[in-house]
Image (tube, rainbow, N blue to C red):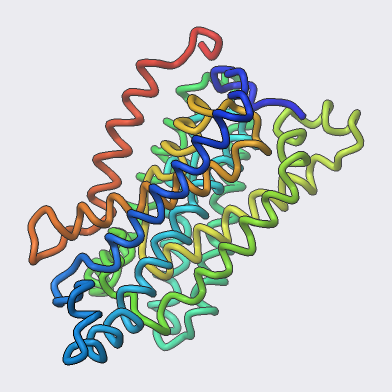
Length: 338
């Protein structure tokens, strides 16, 4: 299986070291998830859970709010990390992910359209409309790239960022004119504070789609090598591209509809994983999912503790962390990708 050619190529770690890293990674995510269960305004502690006088109320709070929130954090982080890996495979660019290709902003256009024409629409319908808009926007991005005479590694994400800016500005203008700015801000800035039982279950769909990506990993990698190579290897390039981008669009729409935009997870995580365990796509998917969950869990805990008892939107924390990582990756990029 081919490697992600545009990333700095790394030799795979020895099996023993990979096992140690894997156990350490799983333990880190378990620890972060446990901390996430007991961080917040409400007094939910292990002591209150063991106390017979407060056990019932504490257990109810855990089941209604803390457990759903922690599950949503893990599912959203893992899915966005893998979605970023898929986009980087298909575009052969390590700086492309849903928030640097306009996919998230186009999903927001779909949600805005539903808010205007059918504000009482069920969550599933909103996700479908958002996914269709995200898919259309992603194909527009791919089409623009196909017409560029020079596809420099830095030009590609810049095109996506400019496209995202135009779409976001147009959405903001429409929302302002229709007095929907407050609603729009709720999905522009990622926030898990409203996640409770019954309002996050659609994210389980992203887990199924992540498994589909694992199954299609070899085909997606070959498709990223170009149409002629794919055809010679017996892969239907166009169909594989459509399937890959559709998976990314549905994952992005499900996350945006449920908790809003979580920027740069799909950029930071696949690149960091490639630096640690190598750039073979199939081998790194599990690591990407694990690291994505850990990153989002860690940023959410930070968002809940920096100005406690108040809470910052996790999208702001991810924007800062992802922005710093983006600049660091630009400065450290290998001469192979110039």
